[in-house]
Length: 258
Length: 295
Image (tube, rainbow over all chains, first blue to last red; front, side, top):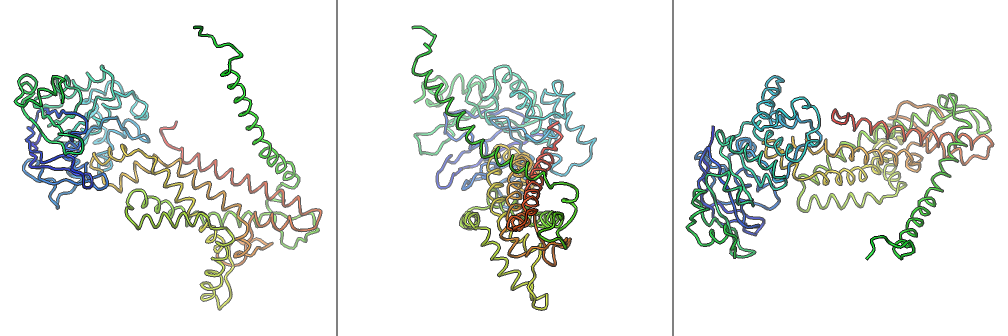
């Protein structure tokens, strides 16, 4: 299962500060969409608006419509936890729960949402770890602490944790920025496999990574500090990186940013 | 330029001096600690035996060489236990409210009054419970007689323990990284469940340490117990009715008696109190660490 995401005029605020201005884009199912742009351009904020994590911060709120298969997730009758179960998220720094074992980390989302049967949990744990390419490395130490793994393994553990709840969309906020090149490669391979089942949105500072893993790319930018970030250009990745329509996009990807 | 620093260089000399200074300060700080511990153990062991631990002072005069602190141990355990039962849920829930839910003037007001409470002298807490509970509330149910009891002492100790527990729990909850909370929210776990299953377990060792500090402080308080539990040379197992003693009150009483046998009883009770608090702290720490992952 995978889901189309349509953002219609999405603006996000931190208190009275407008961080992104009227972003409109359609994210296709079963594809990888990369969001690139300079620091502070609002790409992470936009990503966090997609699963309503933006509003967790005090004073933060979102305006506009965000449709998940046609259903507005910001409608006031929508249950936030249901949205987040449907749209998983992987963070910049691996954040396994330190008091839980590898096993408990993977099934945390299921267990704490009411799945009690041990066989079902065992099954989901193995399936998620296999899909996250971590099963072979941890199969005989599932009861050890999740925080004892290496950084790259921890990040794959967090991916396993996110996909164990069977979401339809996977959001990744610079998932490789704290990892070494080999772990990065492992995660990128994983993204390629996962896109057969999930709609994936990835924020990255690494343009080679965006070019390698994504099908479509969105370029965000700001005019100057204090202004809201905007979506400048959104197109097929091959077109963005070879023949962008906008001068600003070209300047950014060729390193002549200004 | 040579990479080897000459031994007489200013840096090396300054380093040596700082090292000597720090060790000297450490030894200096150790002197009172060792002195207290040594005095307590050497004088306390004179009378610390089965008789002391399991007899009371009932019908034993000041100039008698027997007698013990059983009644006081029972009193301390019951009063501190009741105070812990009252303050731990209240304090931990209060801290959770302040950190996780409270925003705006109400949480600010609570924080302010917790800070104010931290500074309440124990005698004032005792007077408060005496004036409110012992002399006003209990006489209504008691044919007009004031209700001195171990429970009243527990109430006074609660007033002292509550701010300590709220503040220490608050600090520990704030130390839990926001990334863990976000990780749980992103899995669709509701906020309350995130707090119960992710935030509290992560902060638990620190929370337990804070609680044990509060308990240790409460066990050592004398004034409130004297005021509202009154003291009692006999054993009283019922904390809700009648006078009770406590270890610190027992020490206070025995230390003030002009008898050659009383000081030994006071020292033995002081040692008992320290060992009791130490045992409770160790037990609580072990329980908090009884995590399958710590093996």
